[in-house]
Image (cartoon, rainbow, N blue to C red; front, side):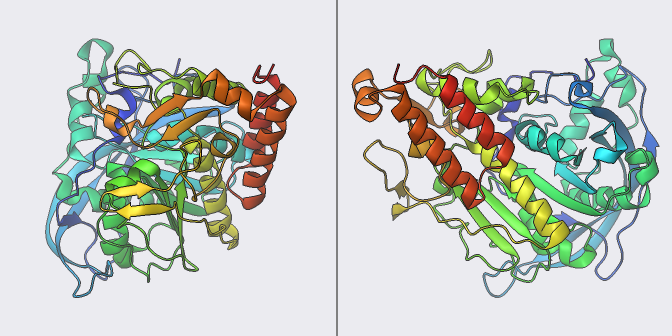
Length: 476
């Protein structure tokens, strides 16, 4: 198995931190082009990259190859001056430089002809005390189907330090002994230089594949840092062709002069945390997608996703989990109530698809309705007769429901407050909604077709969801 999964207490709850980054940033000096680091392939130690909370199958099963490179250079840090108006237009001033050596993990198609020309660069999430790639794990089916290259960058010191102190019995400590991170003030420039390295050293990093477009992505804590990057660093360096900001908390708005596409994907949990302050109007370069029935992290991410090879079975497993949810999604968590089993990863797949068309072809994604709220501080969502949120991006999980899906949780250990909740319908509710199997299938398929027609489901996922309904025993 080429991808090692090290479960460290919170596994994929590494996506969880809701704290804001400091106002010290790193990046190239104002007006200067970004530096390009030296690139060294890495094969030592245990022989495989260490990425806790990742997909757990051999990537060759889906036609992909995994590799890892070290990036070495000199990064800059600079202070940020807040704008006079609350418009996200920060100004950065260089303050210092420091040497660094970090790593990047690469997933690319084995068959070169499958490469679609776009590289997705993920700011690896360190909320669990080590690097993790939640956006690869949640969206890997779509990334593989479309032939993207994915690169995960260890941009922050926590991730690098965890690698340096990794298990010596497996050779990890040897593999990562030469890494060095000067601190998160420099993380932004390290992320810029990683993107530049992909352009300048494609032969080493991508095995000779030639990138046409590069999209930056980050989830949770990484999304917060990515917003800071967009507002402060991107205007100076212009390394990335677009940004997918996944599950950000509130804070500074995204500036309106970014000049490249930005798509922000929010769950119910994220809208609640931000008190809806992260909302801003859609423009020709900005889209905000809010998804009904979803939580910051969920059952797919904690249980199904790591082993999902795209063989068509995950939709059936998700539908079953809505009817029989659990408060213990894996050995690391016991929450106070059954966690969310909603459709967030399906909409993330659509976000990757739409972002690529936007960046590569100029096809703007559809405008999504906002989740309906009746209160803002705290956020209160308007709900239907079944308890599911109204408005937002709709999927069969909320428009042909078998459970009440919420982004709010009742508590529990560790990161459970981010996992939302699922309350399955009673037999009486199910019988009233779906007196027979045909009724359920018809409702589910119609809701799926509507979501696909609106642009919020990709064809492959829609077909899988429809098949799951047909094969289910609901209404029988």
